[in-house]
Amino acid sequence: MGKISISELSYAYQMGGNTLPILREASLALSSGAFATISGPSGSGKSTLLNLIGALDRPQHGDITVGDVELSKLSDRQLAGFRNRMIGFVFQSFHLLPVLSAAENVAWPLYFQGVPRSKRMERAREKLELVGLKDHLNKVPGKLSGGQRQRVAIARALVTEPSVVLADEPTANLDRKTAEEIVVLLRSLNENAGVTFLLATHDPLVVAHAVQRIELVDGKLIEREQVQTQEVLAHA
Image (tube, rainbow, N blue to C red; front, top):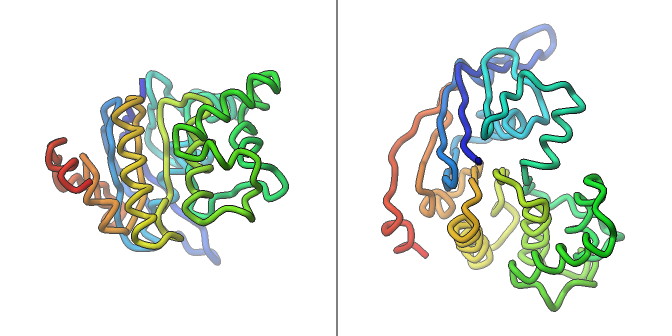
């Protein structure tokens, strides 16, 4: 359900009349339930790639298939539905609504699915308990630590029961201890729920936990190695 297939993907930005290639006929295959990282320096195109897989942007060339859905065949309206149903996003800067409680932030994506409020809040509470925040349901983001806000963001990404979670630098704004806790949490959620996780990162700590380690080099996706589960768990 959560497999990802990328074929001959190309994308470039236009800057001052010049073309800046970001992805150059990049290809990649992730099986359902994968836990993978894409690493590379800032500006290499990691965020662009996640935006394309998550249907926030359209590729200029090539194909992306998530599950059995070929994104190029969808209208803009269908892509919006696909994002809300199939993809969970975890952003570097959390992107929580400051006036809403933790539970209300997590429940927010379900509003767009037409889920009744009582059911939205019930599912939000379930996901916040899953990430260890059952005692912080009614706190607004300003009353939470950085690690707690990231946990809220993770719960929000999971509340729609997505097949794929895309995380963009999920540890960038966290101290080392909290970052380790977040990565271990993501890996645990991946194993227990079978959701595919793809994390864009330049953090060696995150890469150490990956089962598939992919690098973005000169616009190409290169898989460096595939790690056995036992080795990954040894880092936890």
